[in-house]
Figure 1 (cartoon, rainbow, N blue to C red):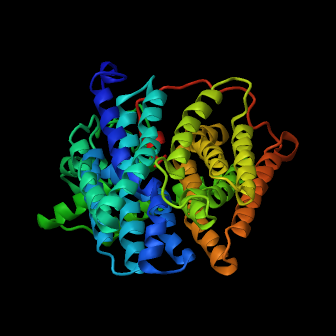
Figure 2: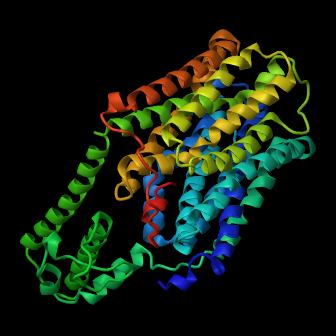
Figure 3: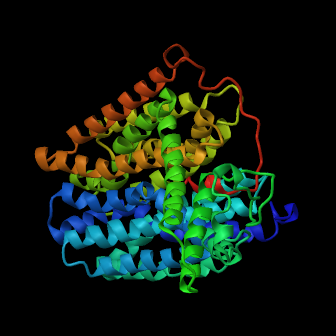
Length: 498
């Protein structure tokens, strides 16, 4: 891939298309707090059960991030975005006709959630392919699409509900989501996806001797974006699996042509696959042996579990406390979303300052968010809720630090696996958080105890993250110096952010 195609030209069209894709996909899920009171009124179910809808739509995509990234690696960003557009739009439209809360959990929570996860993986991957030195800026612009979408969709959904009702609102935003397929049209690939590489590799291996002549890992060599053998670069885990899969396809092709092969050959293929997967699992276990990495995963989980529910419940809190009788022009969800957008950009700028430690900066955002959560039950004015929503939203902007911190802990080589682990813990916390808060309300008929629990949980996470990463506890300095920036045209590292 020529360097002249990077950092400009069609890349900026990719940025705009990816921004709009995240805007269209995440607009409704990120402002689901506006829909939550309507679902409570429509289905007359407990707040704990209803909260599963909002928690799943945000958490499923994160938990399934390894699968989503694998889909993009194998089929490319354009086909995945088209398919995700069908999933998001279809899930939203099906939700308009949901007969009960269980069907809504499936249609809105799972179907839309998986579609959003695919969009996130595809947009980050294609953006990374087109940018090198300006990759950080490009990814920053793209990821703010979720926050801008939440800000606009929160107000738009309020107006649509007033004009057309809940069902009409879901149908309209579902129709808007179909524009994801138009965004996919701009995502012209620079690298051939893994699926086509496997097909091409299989066609080039026409004899059984070529397939099994050099089965050892040390003999498998290739260059990035090519299927020809060279002595320059040894295959990594991902490329090894692609090569082995290509062998399987070639075996099937030769079998169809009438050539025979022994069971010993099949055993060797299985053994090669098992070695590759064993290497991948061993790499994951090594990552989890790092105390700083474990502490960060715990911190992300505790922050996600405690700080995500306000976005879902804050409108219901204002209405249940009588602080507002009707929906305001600028909902609390919109205030939190725009604050999160500012937080992503502001924290991204701060973390580049040499003397600022990124792990402790993340812990500070956890502390600020935890204190705000503890104050919410004590607030007796709508203005107070607006301020606290902005603080919690700004703290939620710390998601922009996860890739940076993960790189600091494990390095670039292990970023793909490590960030997948972090996203799993974050998604798990997001899924559990709203139902836990809803169950607290069903139990006590008040949000006070729920927010006291959430705030305390987040503060405990900040304390544990800080304590376990201190030099005398961790045995090493979490950040001695800022890393030297290494630019690469490979998108594998950033694709895992999905």
